[in-house]
Length: 550
Figure (cartoon, rainbow, N blue to C red):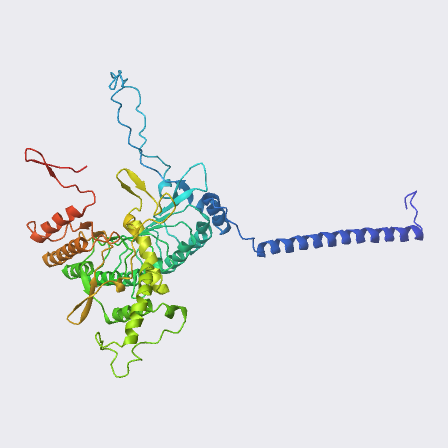
């Protein structure tokens, strides 16, 4: 045993106790580390399972769209970039003729000097042109909240992207145009987008082109709550099935789209069946102003349906029944308010059938009542339009809004502008001094003409532009359209209506028409006078004609 080492039992026991204490501290430390590791692991699992708070859009499209894509799980390289839409360079101003040297002498150009790059295009990196991006137009490029138009071209919009648009589009206050070209829309994504459009406060123009959908659910964009004014559906392979749905969305006997004024259905596959359906949808519609069916498959049969629509047509049984309901409600204002109608005079006459009128056998009491009621009738004549039901009032409001679109209310007469229907003293002006205030009515309440047991009403005169070019319309279709144009001109001369001016532009080019077609030449001559920018030729003192066109 070495010297200096105490080998007593006390020292041995002390050494064993110290060893146990060290082991206990190590065990406690290991347990603490293990507990900390388990706690951090549980916290990380909670973070993974925890649902992030929903993102609140600020109305700035670029940062909102990028953040929503990041939260949806897209990698930064997969997020479509938001870029300013390229614009065509403006036309340089004409040279000032008063300038001293309008054409200064050209200086000698050094041939070796490199020419500057043109500014009509922008170069990009390889394949960057094909990367998905969203083009936007803004009122002020320095203010990100002024996005007015959104263009998406050439990449697929899936359900995830529609969900992102659903969150950010309604918050863009100034957005008024959305343009989707060749974006691979499906029936579901189109319906989801259609549900977003009414939530955008100022959205008026929708362009969806190059998106053929087998189910053809195009009518969902044109619902009764739709605020869209201009709709373009070109190159979507729309057939008669889709045209039928669009027809029902335009109008039925009891409903009507109240905002759409321009519809472009060119470059589709609509035949005579679809053209007949669209013409049917325009029977009760007095809001649509411009319709294009160019580059379809419409023949003489479809053109005849439009000729009938534009001239006059007989009412169907369903329309006659609805007309009687409107006339009944208009004649008794108390029906709409729930009050009991006044007793009918038919009930007082027991021995005379209700369908037979008597103009000579009136008792004295009836004569006195007639005399005393003349004053009341005169008062009622002054208060036109106060009676009627909600349905009739709705048509009046919609048509008055339509008339304000068709022509500007502010006119210039003899150098003075009249922008109000009140005079300087604040009183109301007479009706003769405010011809623009037109009271339009439901088409079913227009004057009718009975022909061979059918009720005929004037056709649709609210359409001012119709494009039927590049179809298969022949001579028979042209004659039908010619009769319709002649009828509209005659009716406009006999009973002019500022809100219903009739066709002003008609396109029939590139149809299988003979070059010497008399009907086509007559249509061209008549439509020339209908052009609002046309000015007749005036004769000079020498007898020669001089054109006054601007």
